[in-house]
Length: 197
Image 1 (cartoon, rainbow, N blue to C red):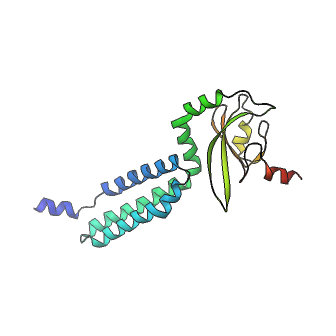
Image 2: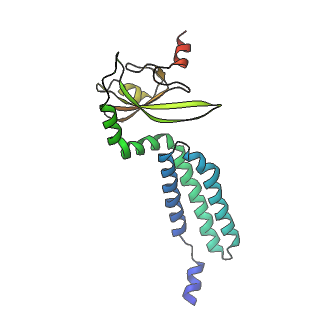
Image 3: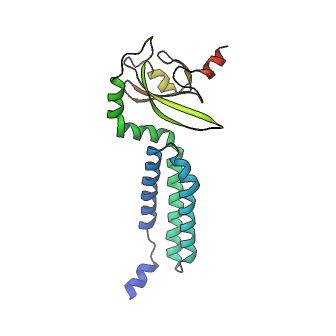
């Protein structure tokens, strides 16, 4: 009986750890499988978890148990914020690790494109009707001519790409993700064409 009372009054360090690990796995899974996973997490899952932890802290009678729950809440918020802040880097990297073999096979099976364009396939996309659609292409660049663009993260018009693009990211040697401006697709360069006039 005395041991049980002592255990109940101790700070539970496992709870914040479990909350961080569980929330991180959930958020990363949502990011990887859907371009809108972060929105669902921010608008629904995150608030529900915060509300649940706050209610649990209010209901608990022991101060140490409350402190454990409040630490779990702080850890949840901190880990979620860190992952959401780095989503732009994490999402493509994890997706590339999981599915690069499939994308490489699909892209390399394509015939050599006409002109001097690089082989490409749609890699990612998101958007809503009022704000427009964003498309990211996976590009195979056998000469690594996009390496400088990926290193500098500067927007521009680059050899092998039909449009000016805001971001080129290197996934591995000769493989790049290229984000086009909103409402532009490969060969349909309305934003780039307007800037050239």
